[in-house]
Image (cartoon, rainbow, N blue to C red; front, side, top):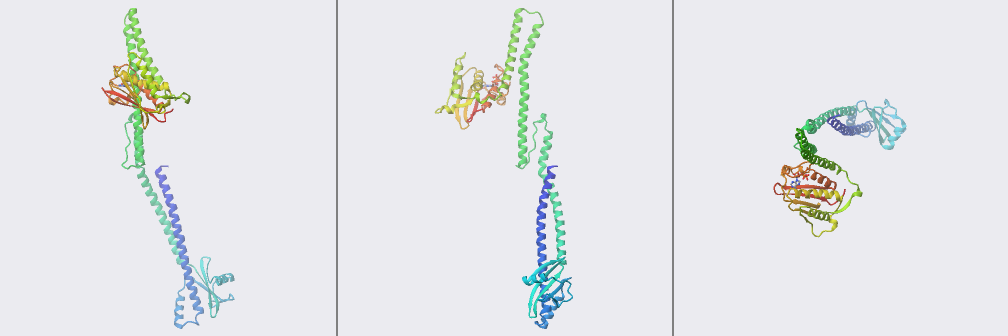
Amino acid sequence: MKIRHRLSLQFTLISGIILTTVFVIIYLLSARFVRNNFYKQLEGRALLTAEVYLEKDELTKMKFLEIEKSYQQGIPGESSNIYDSNNHAVFIEQAKYDWPASLLDNIRKHQTYRFSFRDKYGLGIYYPDNQGDFVVIVTARNAAGEQQLSYLLWSLVIMGLIALAVTYGMSQWYASRALRPIQNINREVKKIRATSLHQRVQRGSNKDEIDELALHFNELLAHMENAFEMQRSFVSNASHELRTPLTTIIGEIEVTMQKQRSAAEYQQTLETLLGESEKLKVITDGLLQLTRVDAVPDASQLEPIRLDEMLEALRISWSHQAPANELIVKLPANTTPEQLTLQGNPQLLAVAINNIIKNGFKFSGNTPVTATLEITSEGLLLSISDNGIGIPEAEQERVFMPLYRASNAHAYTGYGIGLAMTRKILQLHQARITVSSVAGQGTTFHCWFSNLTSF
Ligand code: ADP
């Protein structure tokens, strides 16, 4: 069942329950009022009957005639009885009913006593008089009251049905109006395919939950588009990087096979083939390593790592290489060793940091590289800067993708695997890496280690 119909039915059901409760209360209160009113009327009639039959001797003629006149205008179908203290019907012998002694005793006990009898209401009063103590009983059908109540009942039923029909119709209209933005989103989402991930769903003008849904859906689409783009770019980078050595290998073989060659020429060709094959091996090994870094090491492989000591070790290692490269290490003042320590895998972390330093030297023509360690509110921050060729702004995000090489880097050796590896290792250490660079001026990589660094 569609939400629209379900909502309308639920809403109508709730309204129905509320309406029925209210109408039942109205009906019961009205019925009580009509009954009480009728009993009051019967009481008046009983008093009048008593006065007509028992007060004749005590009233003036005028007064009595007046009372008798009112007595004539009785309730339709009314019947009256008067009983003396011996329970004998007196004055009105032709009475319709013969009331039991228990009822008469009850009336004497309560002075005024109400009862119902078949479809009639009855009321008795105890009337002590100079002629004796009497009981007067009047019974009648409340035809007018019953008619009023049945009119009220039908009015309530019809009003209730109309109200429910209107509620159902209005809730259908309201629900479909409220759900229209979702229907629109649904329609737009249906059209989006892997090839049209650039499309976005239209957002509403209200800042409500549906708008939030559209916003999050658009964000998801943007992520997916980005991921698809990265994947496409990876495949194209990978095929480019693998094709270059393969093309060289095939070309070299074809040229060599065109005629008989000397032993020295064959030697030369084989050397070229070896060099290009080694490149292929480096690339495939690099990709393989990259997938292996995904495996999360178990707790036994975790060790406390002093970042300042690791940087010092790397500085010494680079200074011993030929030609010697200068790594300038800047450490924060007044720190405890604990503040510079994090949990991790020292071999992997050294590879990650060294990849950045290596790039710094490579892309700056071996000029000094600076590694600065700072303590920030977010945790430890390691910044590695060089004054090299920089990275064009549009390409800065992509340099972390496997096999991606910036457009200004092709004159330098490399395969575009180092930074992808670095980012993966840092992610394993719950750290993130960002880059800021100005093409032609230099590059700084920032590694943010959170305080709670552990696998
Ligand atoms: P590689 O250095 O082998 O090309 P990386 O994955 O280490 O691969 O780097 C990817 C790309 O990022 C490089 O090709 C280069 O374009 C850019 N890059 C990385 N570090 C620097 C840097 N310090 N200065 C300029 N460009 C850099």
